[in-house]
Length: 362
Image: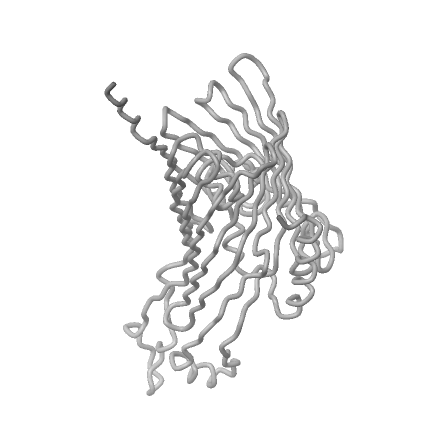
């Protein structure tokens, strides 16, 4: 097993090599979060994730699913319904020591008007020549988790395939790897997810025939086929379980996200590393009702007069579980409490157990 210090050295080395060519927020649709539990806790689930959504949050957690198999799905909408975010996943325990999973994510804006041919060769406006296209991002995550010989330590990893489509104008294929680990000690949980650990590379291809003439006429630069790089991100989490009263329990978790793509507007910003902390808590009654809250996205927003406003993003969530079926809800803002573009997110989980083996006849 590669020691942590060597992994950190590798991350720094890779970040320095690709920093000059890597744009900020590359593949950022994979940072939005999936599952209403995680969103309700402001994405603070790296250490406590224990269901099918672990294939996204921390691969090591898929081994903690309660049943032999779990299926999960989610649908959410952002920017007043303009953008749609969908998720479907499954996880299977192969044994008590290993598990596999697959996750599919789609983030897209559909029915975008294409007005490149709005004006014909005679200078007439032709609304009948307007067509529609979609801008869609896909991610396919193949996950594996394995218990180690160290008691309480589980490790895992993702093979990640990215597909990005901009109508008939451009498309990209990408490939990357994630590495995750979870460690349990008494009531304490620790987690780490090294996302895009070797950097993720998207190879873009442009169909310039679709827009070259218009771009030249309007003085726009013609894009060329290129390679987009997503630099590594380190996600760290620490959680603790609490017994409050009789059938009431709780989990509190503090996470920090360390990005390597340059200075971001987060609580602790520098170049190339920026640190974004966030906190979440979950209150559980009788393993039936779950109330969640979280806070994150701390920022300083500059004003015209030179002063700065400190903002943050609060989230709330609720979950219900009946036998092997669970439904989760999150009420989340896209920025801070002053922005009224709230999203209602629902996600479902269903567990399946293998049939009990029929006792053999004596």
